[in-house]
Amino acid sequence: MSSGHKHQKVENSDVHIEVARRFTQHNQRYSSKRRAIVSMLETSDRPLTISEILQQAKSFKGTRNEIAQSSLYRNLVVLEEVGAVQRIVSTDDNGRYELNEEILGHHHHMLCSVCGDVRDVTVPAQLEDELDDALTKLAKRLGFKLDQHRLDLIGRCKKCA
Ligand SMILES: [Zn+2]
Ligand SMILES: [Zn+2]
Image (spheres, rainbow, N blue to C red):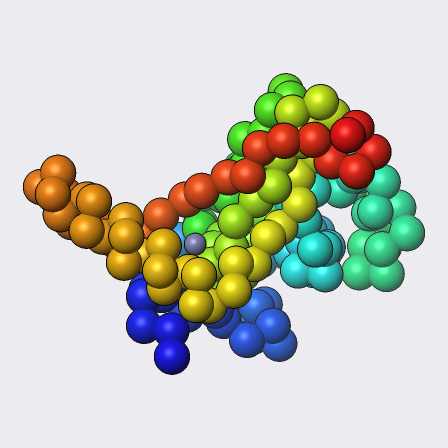
């Protein structure tokens, strides 16, 4: 059994309920555009760039009309502030966004150092436990209490290999 995970994944159907709860806590309105952005991120298997979100918004059923770029920036700032969304830094200049790890569940990222593409990687539970144990011991030796870890895999994607 996996014991190391401090952040239990929120069930997918509950994503909007959880995000709505965070909006209420921050006295912010969970508008239809914000819901649409969360739905896009929820159904994606990787973090999305601004231009990918704009592209998807055009065809997304949750949005009655396109999201303007300026409005998307503002909404992403608010989504970050309430703790619904986090920004991922890759090897290029594009900001990428995904749901907060507490909502999405613990995972890692595979970054392409050529094109900047980011993929989600779920490490098998046993390996996560071994990682957690090893890193907890390492941190302890350094007088540090480990709560969580972030590890990226950096290399070249299929397209760029
Ligand atoms: Zn690549
Ligand atoms: Zn991990």
